[in-house]
Length: 205
Length: 169
Image 1: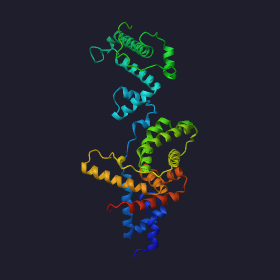
Image 2: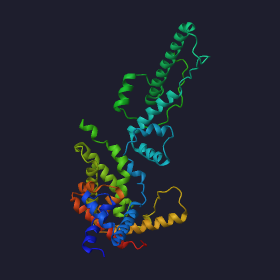
Image 3: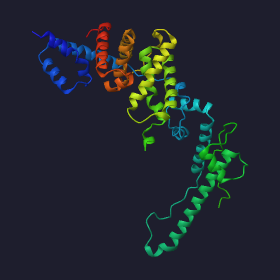
Image 4: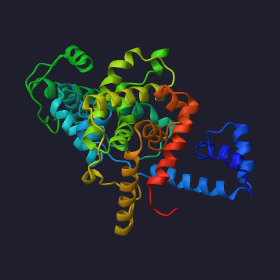
């Protein structure tokens, strides 16, 4: 026959037992009692099912508006690249509707992204295998120059694109103010529009 | 040094928004109230982060959440109610059969209704433990009640639920 007082003492411990919240000596006592008490094992099973039922309640998603005040930050690039889920896109879009700073940031990111994407493709040398050391000197020097020119062109293109995006097509190029604006976000634009899709490299040295 | 341990508000919102929402929903059974609570908590977190001293972040956050919830309850001066039309569930599993979905929704409804019948002090401990997944220690920190009381409230809450749920055990 089960010892009633032992049963009562053990029963008090059963939820904490299921949750792994017993102290070592309590655990030892509970295990010792459970080993021979059918009644307490049944109680423990029932409590375990109640516990599981609450734990298995489905997780509900808060409505998107809940996060409208939240700045997307790093998610803006993923937003541009179409790498967000539908729910995330909806959230970011709603946020952009009411946040000037984020609209400006998206603008800049879009400009930078467009400029990088518009970079002229640099063709590899005709032979992918490294030429013999004797023939390398001039060729390698020239190739380095070409790459340097391409890098300069890329930088210029990016600055141009940012200037076009932020200051309108005809705005004068002012790197210092662009840099300040980009980091401090002091300037606020009246509206948000899609920037030119590509930047021409014609005439860029 | 210390600032590095203070989480950014955006991260808190992203990481805990869903938890706070589900905590509030399981306590109130009302989606609008739950959404309101998330916004209120995030606002309080934003204001409080400056003065947050690194320690048990969960204890700190859930204390704010609990206080916001209790303030809200006092303001409304009514017992939380459940609107059955709001009990539409998003199941965990990927592609359950329609029967499984129905059974799951029905079971969830039963559990939600039973939860709402618990006195609030038991309900909140059960929800913090089994919905949010907090340790007894974090629950004690959040509610400022002794650890032994947390333990007995969770246990008594579950026993009440056992009595309320009529499905065969």
